[in-house]
Image (cartoon, rainbow, N blue to C red):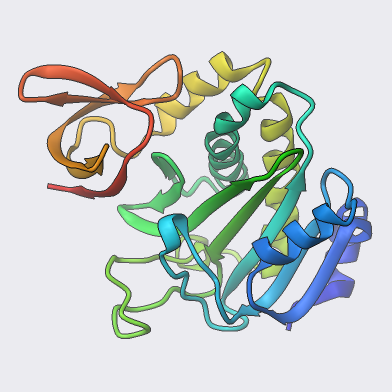
Amino acid sequence: MFDLRQFAALAPDWYERLHYHSELNSTNDEARSLAEAGAKHGTLVLCDHQTAGRGRRGASWICEPGDGLLFSIVIRPTFAQANWSRIALAAGIGVVEALNDKWAIGAQVKWPNDIYIQNKKCAGILTEAREDFVVVGIGMNVMSAPTPAQGGARIDAVAVADMVSDTISREMVLATLLKSILNEVDACAMDFGFQLERLKKHCYLTGKRIKFNANEKNFRGLVCGVGSDGALLVEVDGVLKSFSQASEISLS
């Protein structure tokens, strides 16, 4: 079980915003319900186990109780809705820089919404927007990571504890992440250029050959970086193309 007393000592401001559950269908669904009922910017939903946790495009998120962090944050942006697409990238930067500043573990952003450490997935980010709010949901392997035998996981996974020599806890990791995530999300309208420079530094895919789906077509190419709008730049058949959305991205 998540130690609420320890978390309150580590992050008292966030503890006051916390809605904790031992089990939920989905923290994103609960956060959305709270937002629709008027929950404030920065409201936090956390659970130990999700029965219907999901990732991007409906993929499932596998996490045994006590192994990881499953949480969602209600965001009420003060900037134009046209820029809300930046929020997922900003959250990724917040996660990566918090982990690296605290533990120097070489975390990277796998565009657009995954966190990788040493070529293995550590976390996923799912943003869901409504008319006047956005929910940022994050699932992270902290104490241990699922194996391919657990629920049919298709990719190699890693936990934060696998990379840290010191003793850590889920409470410590969550307290480390939250301020960084919210600061980056709040700043992504005005400071997106600065965020992009840091994203380029932490971009897992740059220089790698990938295969992916975009606009209902399959592509293969060499990732050349991230554009000024946050889109992925890929050289496909000798032509540099920009992709603002893509799915099923894997190394080829």
